[in-house]
Image (cartoon, rainbow, N blue to C red; front, side, top):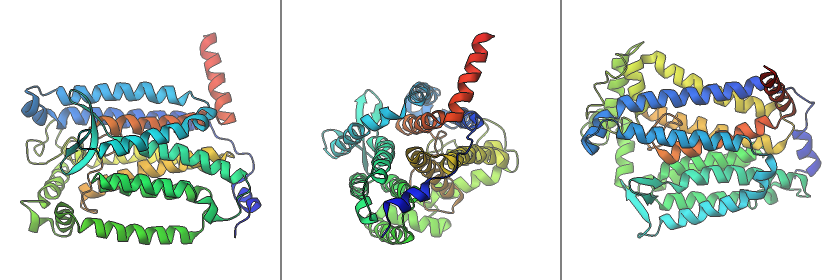
Length: 397
């Protein structure tokens, strides 16, 4: 049994300075990834865009619009006080759950490639509720757990309710949509929240075992998932089917060498590599910008992770710690799954590379999550004071 005092003792630490340099590092890394993503989408999508729309710039222009919306939302969220998240997190969570349910209704949800996880808005624009669910689960879970730690809860079994059951319900709804890739992200996001409050190791052990069993059962129920697994084991044997994408992703990376064959010069994007501007854009980065380009992308993702980890370690506010840990888990794990699939280290799951791959919902809500991270970072006393001082100096000038 873990007592309330023990939990608080684990989260209290001497006052630590959190510099505004972390805030600027987060901004630079975010906009750096966004810039690289826009450039690579412009390069990788031209052939597909021309084939589908008779205009090679349509896909790029749509992503440019999504990025503009994402920037406005991210910066607006970054200015919100913490009390806003405490007041509205439950409402946002319920909205996301309702949207997840609506997706399952045939007359509302749109099915693409065996996955019913989009809602049509107008024209070609669609909303993916599972991306909203990631963000609302993080914020609501952080609010609930930070409140529970301050209450009289004395056991971890009680602490699990209601966050764990609600997270499980969201994951089940996403699985019903056929989106196993997003469900793989939701699980670790949920567990990261409990890790941040010091949950016992057995919780993660049992959860990992249950998760692996669930993945196995779900994988053998769909033929395309079995093909993806077989193509991961032996891509050459499945070269004309599921292994085609994996094989040509490796071709792209191999042909890039150290510095790449040149921006816009990709050969694989000319119909050889499926999803070149979405799930496999990392391969095009490697082909055109080489190993140097892929390392820059990974370094920028690592910078976001470093900022979040440093904030989680140094902050004295549990809500901030929970937000930082779970946002880091989301971005890092999704990046590992995406890059791992391109490198052939993991099976293909269809998750985008954060801030780089094409996709409106993914981009906007990933940037919204970074906005929340920026908001709690700005709320740290030292950061707030430094930013205020810099603003005052600019006003004087």
